Length: 548
Image (tube, rainbow, N blue to C red):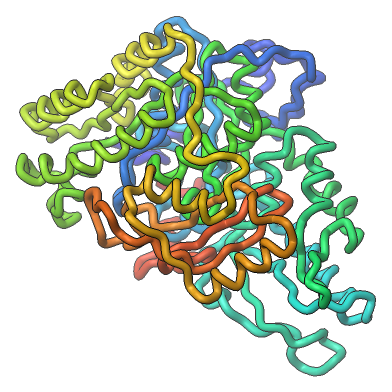
C-alpha cells in the first residue's frame, strides 16, 4: 500500500471556493488561503441543527488508536450514504509531527488534505498563538525591568511548538541588568498554552476579550492576581489572534468538508478543537463529527465536563474506537507482538474496553464501539470483541477506513444513524459546577479512572491554598495525566482499580476558565524520542516526503 503522503499527493482536490459554495457558504463567509484552504466566518443568524457525534477511544498505546482516521472515514461514509456530514478536528502540533507520532491528518484513504500544509504551517494559527503568548511574556518582563510592576511571582511561561526537553527548566535574563531580571522559568509547548485553550473555548470576539482580560500572569506581593488587563496587553493579543480565531476549512480525500482548528493536547490540556469549528460543522451539516484527544478518560471527559458544559453542546452519540492490537497491548503483549493472534491477551485486555464503556455510559449518550480493522485480524478474535460489546449493551461495527475510505466505515455510519434516531440523552457530568477543585478531581478520578484515592504533593497543597485565597477554588478541572493508562503510571495497563492518583500541581488558567491538575510525571513540554520522525522528512523535486 502507498504511504499516507503518497496517497494524499495523488488526489485532485476541489478548489476551496467551489467546496465552500457547494456547501452553502457565500463569498462574505470565507477567505481563501490559496486554492485549497480557507478561513471561515459564518453569519451569526445561521441555525446550528447538525447532530453532534463525538469520536473517542480506549486507552492509548505507542502505535496510536486510529481515532482521527476513524473520524474522517465516518464523515466520508455518511456522505456516501446520502447524509450531509462535516468534520471538526484539531490542528496537528509540530511537536508530535517531528517527534514520535509523525503526521496527524488521518491515514490511508481517510485523510484531511492538503496533509502537508495541515501538518506543518497550515494557516499560521499555532504561530499566532506562540507569538501572542510570548508577547505577553516579553511585556511582563519589560514592565518588571522598567519597574512599572513589582510581582512576587510570574506564573506566565513562554511557549514553543516543538518538543524540546532542554527548555523545561531554564534561567533567563542573565548577563547583567541591561538584559533583564534573572528568573527561573521554562517553556511549555504551544498546545499547552492557556491561549490555545482560550482560542478553542472563546465563543466570539467579545468572549475572547473577556477571557484575555482575566488571564492571570502572576501574583502580587499582597497575594492578589496580576491580570492581562492590568498589564494592558489584551488589545495587542486580540490583534495577533484575530485571524487565528476563524476556523480553517479544508476537505477530506473524498471531498467532505472539514474544519481543522485549534490543537490543545488532551494529556496536558483539554484536548478538543475549537467551539467555533464545532458550531460551524453543526451549521453546515446534518451531522457534525468531532473527536477528543487520546482515550475517553482524557479527551471525552474534558469534552463533556468542560467544552459541552460551558457551551451548551449535547452530542447524540459517542463512537469509541478500539482495535484488537490496542486490547492485546493492554492485555500485556509487547508492542512488536500485538499484531499476532493471541486470544488470551485479547480477553485479558478487554477490561480496558469495559472500563471506558462504563465511564461513557455514565455520561449518557449512546455508544458505538468501532473496531479499527487490520488485514491480519483473526475472525474469531473479532467475534469475541463483537460478543463482548453485545454483553455490554453497546453497538459494534468494524471500520476499514484506512484501507477503503468512506466505504470501509459505512457499517459504523449506519450504527451512528440508528443511535441518533432517539433524542440525545441529557449529559450527566462527572461533578457539580460548585464542587471545590479537589472534590471535582476526586469525583473524576473515582468515576472515570477507577481510582480509590487522591493524594496531593506539598506543592499542590500550597497551590490549592493560593487558589482558595484568590477565589478560584471552584473552577472546572482539566486533569493532565498519561494517555497510556487509566492511572497516572503509563506502565499500569488494563483497568487497575482502587489506585491512588498523585496530584503534583494545580495550575490556574483563569482565562480559559479551569484549573490544570498535573498528575504523576506529566510534562507540559514533551521531549523527542531516540529516533524522531524529523529524520524521515525531506523534500525531493519540490515535494515533501516522509510525512506520515
